[in-house]
Every structure is written in structure tokens, then in C-alpha cells.
Length: 158
Image (cartoon, rainbow, N blue to C red; front, side, top):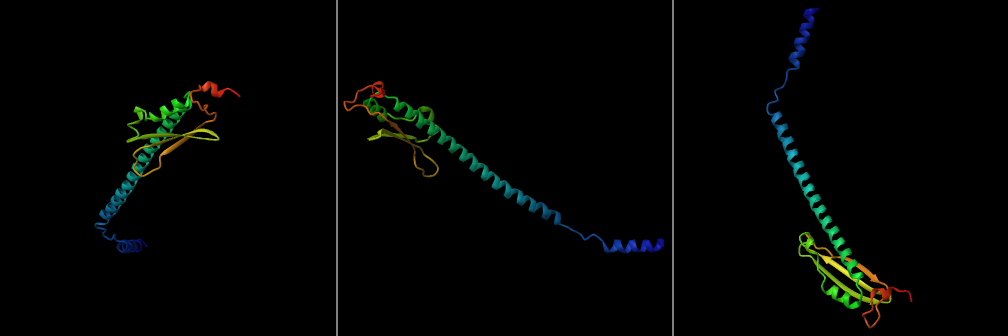
């Protein structure tokens, strides 16, 4: 019976001989390296895009803060002459000139039945063409026609 077992085992081992796999491991390594390089390329492109998007988002936030600060300053002027003078001298603050390359700040005043409307627009050099950011504010009580009434006079109830 033992002889019979040895005979079977020998036949089984002979039938299950290992087929030589020369070069297949090298092929697996090359495929893995190609997949790794492709994945690294995609991840680096995505990371670069996210970095640029975060930088542009930061610039937009800074521009919005600049518009808000300038509008607050313009809404606090005492007369129409001061407002016109302040609008003529609008400039981006020096701290933002490095963050907003070729930045421009423009403003205009329009009067209608709702009061005096101030519109500010800020723009800078961006990668893609984009509309300037705009902020609109209203002075609800107009200055009188002779022009030099103080802000406290125009805020008193009638």
C-alpha cells in the first residue's frame, strides 16, 4: 500500500511540475511602475489645480474686503463734493498691489429716486478673462442741491 502511495505522489508531482515563468515578474513590475507614474501625474495635476484655485479664491476674498472697506469710507463722507473727490482718487491699497497684479479700482455715482447710488468695481490680471467684482451702496438721504450740507444735517429726521 505504501508503494502505491509513493507511485501516486510521484505521478502527481510529475503532472504538477512548475511551468517556468521567466520574465513574467519583470512584466508585472513594469506594469506596476507605469500605473504608479500615471497616477502620480494625475495627482500632481489635481494638486496644482487645487493650489491655483485656493490662491484665486484668496485673491477674490481680498478684493471683496477692499471693496467693502472703500465703500464704507465713501458712505461716511460729509458732502457730495467730498464724495466726488474721493471717487476721483480711488486706488487699491498698497498692501494689496502684490496680491492683485495690475489691479484697478473704479467708482461712479448715480442719483435717482432711491437716493445716491455708489458703484465700485475692482479688477486685476487673472489667468482667464473675468468680469470685475462689483459692490453697490446707497446713500438714502440725498445732500441738498446746494451741496455742502453736513452728514449730520442729512441724517436728522424731517
